[in-house]
Length: 151
Image (cartoon, rainbow, N blue to C red; front, side, top):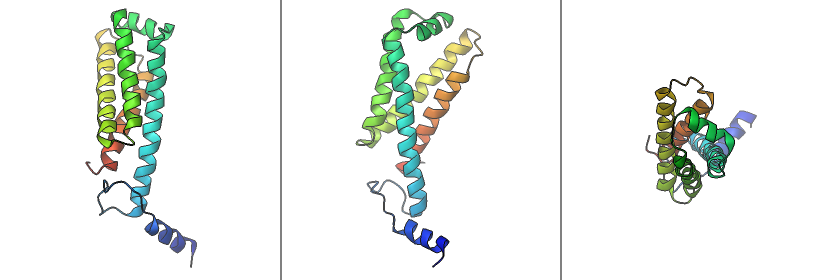
């Protein structure tokens, strides 16, 4: 048996307990890839959002400066930090309650759309940080939908 045949046999024998979420028309290899992306992206997005939430909640100088540049009230800092923290926790809870993770990913996408609007409102073109967060949350939403057989 060649390496390729052994690999195919192994992939064919992989069963991922996804609660029947993925369409059964997909191959075991595809399900394994989607599951790996699902776990990786959810953890990465939860870490990104969690660290950002902490900076907002401890009143760190960087988000405070960003709030001033965007001309947003400082009273919003704890609320924005709370929204980020809720998204991070929701992504992690989503491993147990799938709909919570998907809704958390959607909420984070909407959060970063709002951040983009805040950037554009004041003419800010410093969008690298925003783009990283936004791309991560969009990918997380997509992989949540794919993993649960919605997309």
